[in-house]
Image (tube, rainbow, N blue to C red):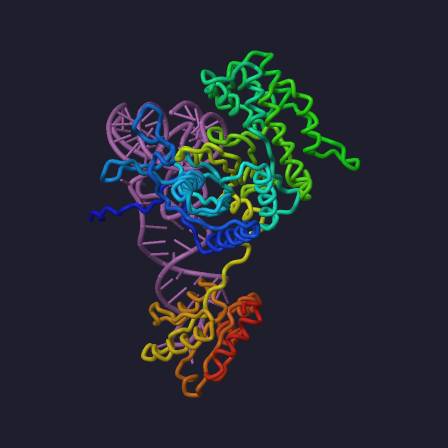
Length: 505
RNA sequence: GCAGCUGUAGCUCAGCUUGGUUAGAGCGCCUGACUGUGGAUCAGGAGGUCGUUGGUUCGAGUCCAACCAGCUGUACCA
């Protein structure tokens, strides 16, 4: 007898279903972040998940085909559409389209799903949530400093203690200046500069030696895979290493060695010979740092770090990155480092792509999904299991209307409640169901109770505790642990007492 | 994309080295003991194209090849 071919139920890789606990955790996080952003005077705006591909700037050069990394499709008029891969490019489109109606500088925030068609990995999904804040129309370093402060405040509002995160600040012009000074400026070296930036970005993972290999002839990893290097000569590598990679950042503060912006800046100042572009970047960094210090944000929250790269393509000046410093173990006992959970920077070119005038902008983005994974793992989120509704059981199937009425009474009193909708034949199954729903209690009314105008209320939470002491099934059933009778008219009141006893009111 | 590892019940896995009747375990699920009560216990039951295709062989879950999928690392990452 051949079985009919069943369709295999399967989730596409890199995508995730989310249950009640995760949804609740996300809601909690989003609300916390929103409060901070509102406090800073930002207002919400939402754009759709789909944009014209050219608005996202993701056509491959010299081809009329979008980048493979974005999910794209053609409209019936042949125009390419794409799912957004971040929230910044759509905002730039929105601002350009509504430029006349916005009060500039325009501060806005929004959160939503973004999509990337890339190989997924641990903690990396093809659909994930970001929460962005942007200030459009201000070139002031105060706008940048504010982003950094807001990032720090947000981390603390989410329950991450000071010292377990850090907001790192850098300026792209520093790196550009250094690269110019070693002779790889100009259009013809654009590709090479990318390789250099990528190499520096890997400092935390590969260390100084690995980065130097990538700056030079290339690097072969443990699996035998070879990565081509930037082919710089020794003196070029030496300049980068001395200016950025080996830059001292540790200072003695009150007898302890700590990383400080002061130390980083002092060292950068000694490198002013690297050229005007480098010096521009340094001046901007100094300006931001002065504002941070004046506002009381010291190096334990926001810190200058010349090795931060981020967003190779569109950042033009200051860049920021939020890093979680805490370490923990995963289910299998392996150490987990969370690393970057957010970042941003100044993107002065992004809005002006649509406009005839320059429009400075700076923004910051939190990776909600990744941060949620981190917070869950360290137990800051989703620790408690959601309590289910009160379940009204069906004893006498002729009287479903009576039971439904009890449910309605509980609901009218703002108590989560539901009628058992399954097959009422086996009463035990109804309790099993209530147990699996994590119901705090069930309401029972059989013929005996009905005659006396009573109902039975069974406290499942208390009952589960009592169960541990009972070994035999007879005893279990006869004692009816944590169960009591009350007048039908007292139903709401008594249920409320049970909920209060467990802190659920 | 490149490399390594892994595909056996709903889940976690054993069996593969050394090919040999009916492919196992734990957990979960269903039924009953228990026609008015969750848990525990006991008894029973359902559930498998051994990732796919081809090859070697009298005989393949086991050996070989290709492919597919997953995981891990690496590359890319706006």
